[in-house]
Image (cartoon, rainbow, N blue to C red; front, top):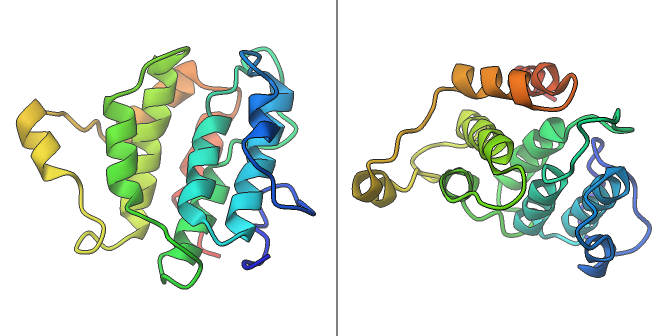
Length: 179
C-alpha cells in the first residue's frame, strides 16, 4: 500500500472494492458505517485520497440515530486526509471545497437534510485547511444558482439538532486539531 494508515480510521490489511459497502444494500446501519470507514482507509492506503473522501461521504449516509457508533463521526479522518494529501504527494485529491459545495447543494435521497448539513460542515473544514487560491469554491454555481452558503456556526447548530449523538462536539473539535 502506498500511504501510511490514517490514525482515525480502522486498519485494513487489503485494498477493498465497492462490494464492501454495496453488500449492505439499502441497510445503512452500523455495519455499513464501519465498512464505509474501512473502505475509506483502503482507498487512502492505495494512494487515492479523493476516493477515500467519497467513502467518508458514504459513512455519513449511515442511519445511526438509535445506536452509539463504535467509532466517532469521521471529521478527524477527513481533516487528516486533507492535510496529508494537500501536498500532492499522496495521490489525487481533487478539490474538496468544490466537491462538498456540489454535494451539499445537490443532496437527495434518504436523510438528505442532515447529509447536506454534514456536507456544508465538511465544506467549511476543507476551506479551513486548503489555500483558496488552489482550491476555490465554484463561483459559477454560486452566481448561476444564487447559492447561499450557510455559516460554519449554522452548520454546527443543525448537526447538533439533527445529527448523531455527540456528532456536533466531534465536528467542532475537528476545526481546532493540529496534528
